[in-house]
Image (tube, rainbow, N blue to C red; front, side, top):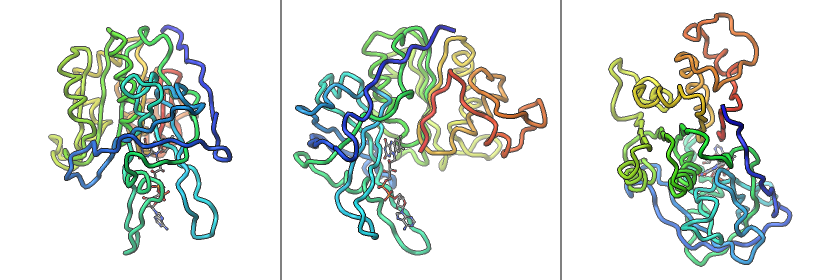
Length: 307
Ligand SMILES: Cc1cc2nc3c(=O)[nH]c(=O)nc-3n(C[C@H](O)[C@H](O)[C@H](O)COP(=O)(O)OP(=O)(O)OC[C@H]3O[C@@H](n4cnc5c(N)ncnc54)[C@H](O)[C@@H]3O)c2cc1C
């Protein structure tokens, strides 16, 4: 296994106490228009700020929404994964992109609108906003990118860093194997479908796997999730996961990691994991969900960003 050399990054050049101003240049829907889970691709112009050229793919940008909480305090910072490559959206270092889902929830008959995501999604080109960052020290592509193969697992907006990483890998002429496993509830929720389909058509070494959980059923009646891809698409994933120089990255919904780790363990891919404690049984098939959740942790080959 080659050494994983992570790039040096600059952190929090602008903090919540000292934010800078960005301008929206793009804000468009990147799911199907009729998706019940609308997500938008947004690009910000950060020219003239100290953030220009500073975001590495995998890092996040902070957004300070205007207004106050019910208690009269300013709203807190929210983080959004950068979905542009390190050299900037479209290769322009003054442009940084992200991928924002409107967070809404009904609880006990009351409908709550997520403060920051809805603020962002309603912005128009030309609107200004307060941003901070960069944030994130480890969730990065190695500097020696060609020394590895990559398996990316994303749920929903967890696709954001992988859009940037995949652009970065293939624009640099990457020859190794890349698999992207993307999970969402409905086909209408697939993010950036045109971009990823075209990448898969263009590059034989890019494998694009979609897991749609609320439409089709697996043979045993269970749902398709990102973690079931380890079985359902074994013929694609096992050969890549089995290479000694493969790294895995997970991004998206908190909780997604446990199912992936358990299925990796069941297939014998223990190198991607670290055991915290000793499960009762040696056989991963016998591990309880509690053991899986508390004892399976990422190893040096695994990069995890869940929220
Ligand atoms: C490292 C990192 C990267 C991230 N990357 C992304 C990304 O790329 N894209 C993305 O979309 N998000 C990302 N997030 C999540 C993002 O930071 C926000 O948490 C998200 O947008 C929701 O923020 P909000 O202000 O819209 O919702 P909030 O106002 O914080 O509300 C959160 C949720 O609670 C509900 N709610 C609000 N008030 C109540 C109440 N009183 N009772 C019950 N429910 C309530 C809201 O409807 C909403 O669903 C990331 C988070 C982290 C930590």
